[in-house]
Length: 114
Length: 108
Image 1 (tube, chains in turn brown, cyan):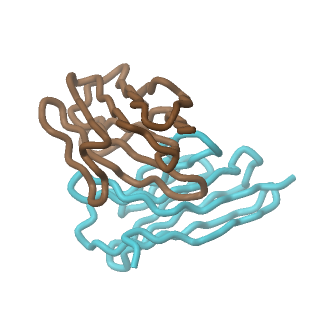
Image 2 (cartoon, helix red, strand yellow):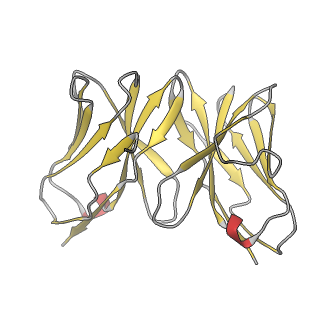
Image 3 (cartoon, helix red, strand yellow):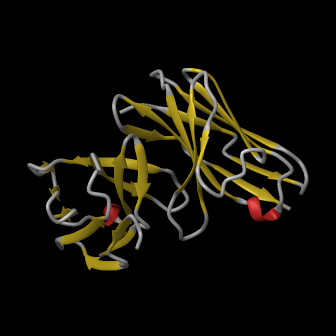
């Protein structure tokens, strides 16, 4: 297997603030990382694909100016939720791809916006 | 129609039972296939890849039928610890699409 970490594991913030979530591949280099969002009792929805050294590719319906992604190195991608609102409360999960297509997931970040 | 569809579940089975989950996908260009399990409020964890020849890992057997665009997961001798949501994942050009998951509860 492979290890992917996420930080923080949970965060509570006030409406209007920005929250940064980090995703790290600890024992391998990942040129591609993915950010997902999961609402209760729903499946994971891909938000964006993060490529090291280039701009992220966002899925349809995901606002790139609201969900800022930076993949500055082969082991770190960050997702910043800007001006968070209660409807952004969700479970955010990153994954890193090792090899051709196996993904390893971080433990997730539970965001609650008050 | 969803790109990846799974049995809606939930499946409630006694310990020791054999249970099978099915998954269909719509994109014939799909290249690779996986089963993940997700425990409540946790991240998905890779259970196994799925190959055309079928593959087995202990009590778990996965099958792929490309002609019918169908994959399956069979769990034999269910344990209490198998209780989880099982996600079918289909990859096309490196992009993964997840099914909605099938919830399994194994009871004593």
